[in-house]
Image 1 (cartoon, one colour):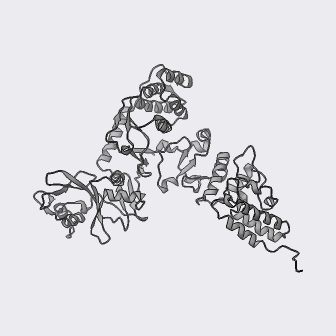
Image 2 (image 1 turned 120 degrees about the horizontal axis):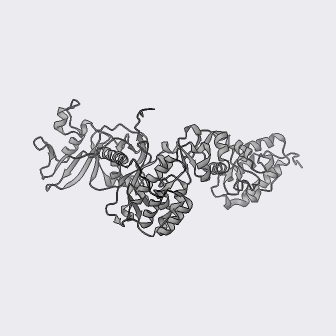
Image 3 (image 1 turned 30 degrees about the horizontal axis):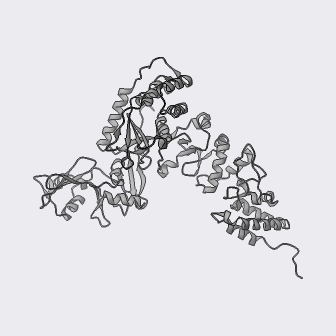
Length: 548
């Protein structure tokens, strides 16, 4: 009757399973998946060695196995059953877990450290991991952190890339609190993601301790302060906790002095409440350069001020604990803040005496005046337009050089006196002429027949427009860059005016043909919301440290 004595090729069975493995929600066709798994299991029982090797190779190199978490995995990534030592290990879906073919296809019976490390060691170096593989890698890193770091010399970076440990400069642990910052791509690639590792391992394992904690070097610069925050004075529990922490004695003198210095600032901090529509904004900085766009946290501790979003404290209590604990960089102090929050002074005193070694009196802390002078110097540098840190704004990847002293921001008289003088009008002069203004050498400003005028203004803006009564109408920042063609570089502090879409501010840039084009801040703000404008890190400052 023509019946074959050997089964036909397994290609059609593999093709059906490959098609099913493309499903994003495999649970909807679970019966169909198990049906074809069963068919393959029966066919493999009658197949020759060559056919078995072909199928085994497919399952080892392609994610064709449905896991209990309803994701797709390769044979080397899953097990037939988990163990008490590794209960979170990925296993074959229970609906197909009793098939005999899994052992033939290279699926191990149960996880062991050796098998997990062997699989992890096969991951492609320097390549981003797909979401399903990244989830399984995180489980393995949580279970065998030290073994992976030392044995494989790779770790998962914050951007999801399997990265050599030599390229990782910072670590982000579970107790860290980066205020929901969306770090720039180049920054994420340098941060080891240790959030899946138990905190006690992060703080004690030699391989992890030697890498600086992200929060210890991440600086938040206040780029917008609420206009009318509600002054609530000082919180008694904050003052009481700060006073006790000023007397704390820790493992090392350096750590003790650091905690006491931060505690002194906490003890005198004033408490402010703000509305959701007028919250503070901070820009994250690493090594003097912006690490990401500005964020609006629910809680912000800035110098001697604590800003908390209005409403019930229970909604933001975790944010409050994380923000107050961040400068201390000590897990026991985080626990103290969590326990002592909103408690009376007697409870705080008892808790601190029970859990910390305290001096009888508060020891004097040096360095405050020097610290204050340093802070004031940095603030003055920003106020005067220090070029430290730029955000590259692009409608496509790329960027161009911005020069604060470019002749385009000079007045016609200054431009004529400049060595870099060019006979044609500057970009802003073209802009002013298009709007009916003319340059008045006597008044040193552009004047309009209707009585309004435009003159140079304080940095970081270049020109200001006034109405006939002398009231300011608009401030202009001018640059010979084209947003549509190459993108532009702009100081990060200045960028906040435009990102928030504030009226009364504009950029004057080149259009595609070299003429002036005005970009009002409200227009830019709407483009940011629609993701038509993307922010990239574009400039870093480097210097030689004396004595190194």
